[in-house]
Image (cartoon, one colour):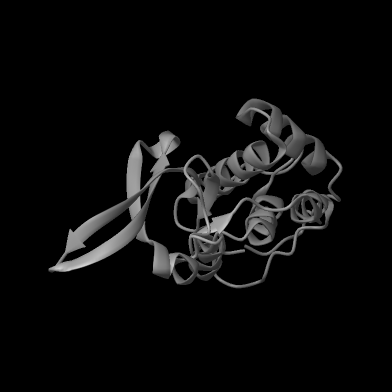
Amino acid sequence: MTSKTGLEFKVGDAVVYPAHGVGKVAAVETQEVAGMSLEVYVVTFDHEKMTLRVPTKKAATAGLRSLAADDVVTKALSTLKGRARIKRTMWSRRAQEYEAKINSGDLISIAEVVRDLHRADTQPEQSYSERQLYESALDRMAREVAAANKIDKGAAVELLAKSLSAKKPIPTAEAA
């Protein structure tokens, strides 16, 4: 995937950074760090109003990647339709696992969190922390699906909601 110049991404490319989601390569700069010249991708995240500088040679190990391919997006959407897999462990342990999946940047893992934490109108209300994790995962997934399909975030959220409505319901006798 590396081009002739040795750079994986060009200015203007949409990229995904695991801990922050979808961003855009604003520039490729050479900076002086500790007396050494270092080439970095300048990635901007409009939704977080943040700029990140990732060394070009360390981009892959830092987890910087291009947007998910169509087949990955399709698989993520079909993951949303599956039955929720809620482990019978303490909420604090599950919350840590969900947080790790969200921050992994992997679209399929994020889809699993959205699927597992989604509540239909007929199901009991979510706790505050469940709702926070759900909204974080839904937002992260919607932004990547929107960028990958070249649609706006609202349309992506509708697409995700449609997949979630086709989901098999969770048995109501669940242990929390």
